[in-house]
Length: 481
Image (cartoon, rainbow, N blue to C red; front, top):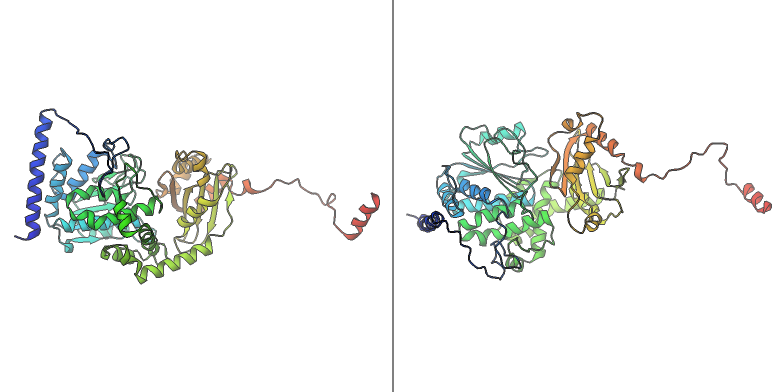
C-alpha cells in the first residue's frame, strides 16, 4: 500500500470517528458552541469578527451548498449531507474512485486560480493527473454554446467542475447520461439559473461576496493539510484579481497575512496582471496562462515567464491606444460611455480605469464598449464610478444589472430584451456588461440618449442675425461709442 493510501485511510478514519461523534451529539439535541479565541484565525481559516464570535453561518456561501460541494468532489454516491465532516469523507472517497474528471475554469485569474486549486486538491487526494482534463472556452463563447458543449462531451467525463463561469438555466453541461456536474461561482444568479441536473455552490447571496477562487479554496482547505501550503497564494491572487489589488483581508474573510508577508503584495499583484494578460490579447492565448499557473509553485515563477511578460506588454500598449477616447454621457448624466475598436479585450480595463477618475455629480456607471472584439457584436463592460461610491458612503447602492435592465424596459419595442440575448447584463451588481448584437446595442444607446447630456443647448442663429467679425465692423463699433 502506498504512503498516500495509508494517509488517506488514516485521515478518513479520523473523519468517520468525528462524524459519528457529531451524529451522537445531534441525536442528544446538543448544539453547544464553545467560546472562541479573540485572536485572528490562522492562515486559510475563516476569520472571527471583532467580537470574537464565529463567522456568519452562511459565509462564504450557504452551508448546505458547501457541504454538497465537498461531497460532490469526493463521492460518486449521493447520500444526504449531515455535517461538513461527513461531506469531507465523501469527497475523499470520490477522489479515489479513479474516474475521468473535467475542470472548466473561466479565463481570468479568478477562474484559472479556482481550477488550479481544485486540480491540486484532487491530485493530493489520490486522483491520477492523467484522469484530469481541462477545457478552456474559446474566444467569445460560453459553456452553454453548442460548440463548447459538444467539445466537453467528447472528453467523456464522469465528473465536471465548472468554475467562475457565471450561470444560467440551460441544458445539462455535457450530453452524457449519469454524469455529475458541480458549479462553483459567485456571480449574480437566481436559485433556478443553473444547468439542468447540476449541483451548485454560489457566494452571490452571502455578502461580503467571496469570489470563486477563494470559495473553491475554502471548500477544499479541510480536505488535505498540504492544500494551505500549495494553494493559499492562488486564492489571494484570484481574490485580488476580482476585488482589487489593495483588498484588505478583514473578517469574515480569512487572514492571509502570512501569504502577503511570504510572497509580498507587490509580487502577488504582478502575478494577477500577468495571468490576466493572455486572455486580453488578440490571440486569446488562455492556455499559456493556464499552463504557467498550474506549473508554478509561487508568484516568482510567473514573474519570469516570457510568454506572460510579452502578453502583458501587448495589452498595455493596446490599453494606452484606446484609453484616451472622450466619454459621452447619457441624457440624465448617470452613464458615461466610451467607445473603441480593438481585437484585444481591453474594454474591462478601460472601464475600471475611467471609473476611478471620471467625476460628476450625477455619474453612476462607466461603460466601455468595444466594437472590434467580435464581428457583428459589441462587447461592453460597466463599472460603478468611484464618485458614486463616495456619494453612497460605500453602501453599494448602484446596481448595474438593474440599471441596464431598467434602460431596456423603456423601449417601445418589447422584443429588445430578448434580442439582446442571454449574455446581456451578466456578472455582478457593481461589475456587469454583456455581448450583444451591434444593432441592438445602438438601440440601447438611443434609449439612453448618449451624447445629448454633453451637448450645450444653443439658440439657432439665422443668416440674417449672424454677424461677421471683420476689421471694418471693429472700427465701426469703436466709433459708435
